[in-house]
Image 1 (cartoon, rainbow, N blue to C red):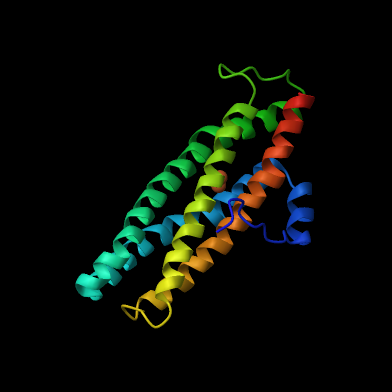
Image 2: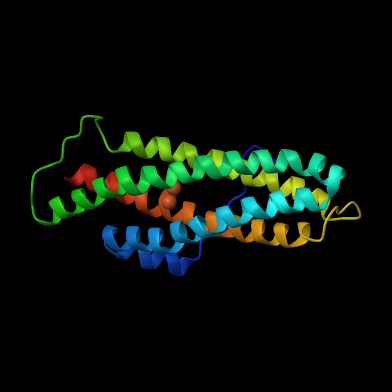
Length: 188
Ligand SMILES: [Fe+2]
Ligand SMILES: [Fe+2]
């Protein structure tokens, strides 16, 4: 596994659409599309991994135990990350955009620049990517002749779908939302 997570091509149409939209609109899209998806998918996958470990008996539980532990950690951290965005950063961004649109003066925060909380969330994204890569590696290794339970195949598919959705989600934040916010703060 490479230390740097390989980047997928970011669809041009997404770049064009969200570079031109309001930040309010982009945030609404991220929460209603990507955060809502994760809130449904993460509990489903946690249960599915536990079932796969049970179905595989002693062998299944020993091979799937590391996956199960990593997934529980990943889920807990990611749910916290979503809350940091929805309860802290996104409200600040909406406030900033409203203030700039109304011609109000620059916002001042107790934590300094808005780039500081953004930097923390960018670091979270890297950790989440590494954990997904590790879990895909593990499940991929079970997908061959050593497959311990029929549920492992669907699990791999669901984890790949989660990976694809996370890549788009993180690209929207790292490559469009966050740079636009830094720019806006510079202008305000
Ligand atoms: Fe997000
Ligand atoms: Fe994020």
